[in-house]
Length: 215
Image (cartoon, rainbow, N blue to C red; front, top):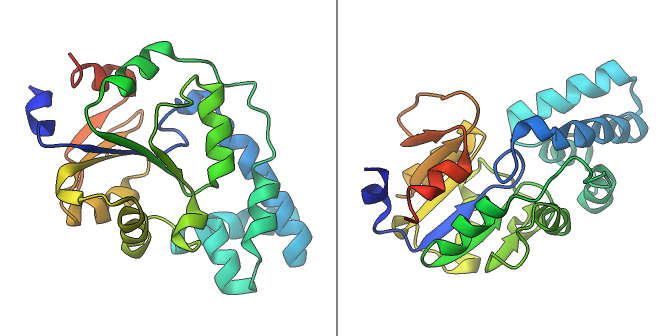
């Protein structure tokens, strides 16, 4: 049974985008458009080049923002405000998910490479406000992004999390490598599995997976 692998867990760490809502809601599509617009205006390139940079920086640095900071000295604050000014109309309340998160024993947090204010808006639109003990954005890790181990260490130290007693839920396989190294139980939340030594569980439905842990 899945639950036996989580009997030691007292800290539950959730990514946000495409984890606490399904990717078919396509919220991140809006963010990508605004990322491209910001890169065009700030770096001074056309749309195709801006999109290429967006993807390249995400692949090499973990986030587009990290690449912009490293390569162009970008100020992260206006960037985060701009890219997250999006509509939440595509999100729906998931009461079942809320009930299962509420039933998890111990401390529950959200940790996203986006900003904390943006995360709070998403949680509200999903009916998940008030269920988490803390919500952390990339700003709480000094703008160092997942998958950098230093970013996880900064957030976990800030929150007082013992990784050996924690579980991490993430849609990006890269972002589960450091948590696994630190001793966390890792869960990949995505439509398709990504077999890798650092991924211990996979689910294409977070609500169903959590239901196995909260019976």
